[in-house]
Length: 193
Image (tube, rainbow, N blue to C red; front, side):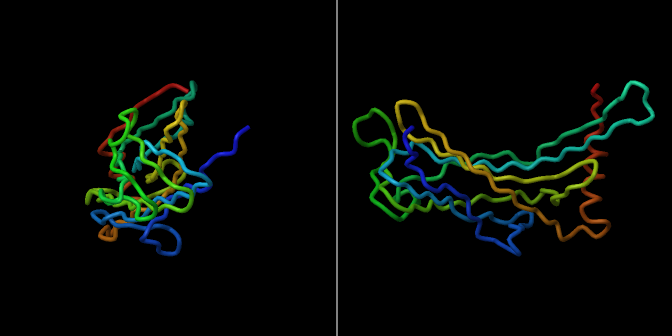
C-alpha cells in the first residue's frame, strides 16, 4: 500500500488561553491550517467548516413506554474555502501558480514537499451562546478542515478541533441560563426510543 504524501494536517488557533481555545461572541477566530507533505502534491481545495449546536435530551422515567424528549438547534454552520495561492492570501511558503491556470484539466494548485501554512480567519456572530456540557444537554463548537487532493480518485483528509465560546455578559447562572433559554425558545420535540 502506498504511503500518504500528507505527513501532517492540523488546525492551530491563535487565541489560546490555557489550551482551551476560548473565544467570545463577535470575536474574529484566527489561526492556520498546517500542512506538511512528504512529496509534491496537487491540492484542489482546503475548506474549513465551523459548526456550533445545542442538543438536549432526557428520558421520561414516569412513562411506561419509555418516552424520550429531545431538541437540537444549530447556531452556526459555515464553510470557508481557504486561499491556496500566495497572491490570494494563501500560504507564504513554496511556489504557487494561480488557481485555474495551466492545462485546464483541473484547478488544482501544486504544493511542494515541506511545510505549508494556510491562514484562517472567521468572524464569530455576536449572538452565539456559551459552550456548555451537562447531564441533559450541551452547546458545542467544532472546526473541521478538509483537504481535497487532485488524484485519479480524490484523496480527502479531515481534521477537527473543538473550541469554546464564553459569554462574559451573562450575570445569572452563566451557561445554565443559556441552556434554559434554548429549551424554552426551541420547545421540545418528542420522539419514541
